[in-house]
Image (cartoon, rainbow, N blue to C red; front, side, top):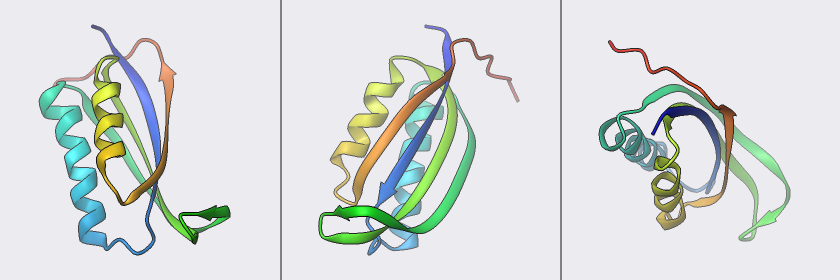
Length: 105
């Protein structure tokens, strides 16, 4: 399958520590780069934000946006990992480009 460019916005539990959050992101990076031979392009930590409505009785959450290039079949595994993590409240994945070349190096 040809790689495509995606972004995923993740809402983490505000009580989650930086170490736990980094472990969750490292797990996703492993899926992207090791299992599916994709490339993580950007990790954009938006930090703690007020939520528009309470999620699991929390009014704040920690947002992180990642951009990456992977084959389309990797998305189901990435989203499965996010669903299994009890500290991930919500996530949204969007396809940014149909064609994406992963540079070697």
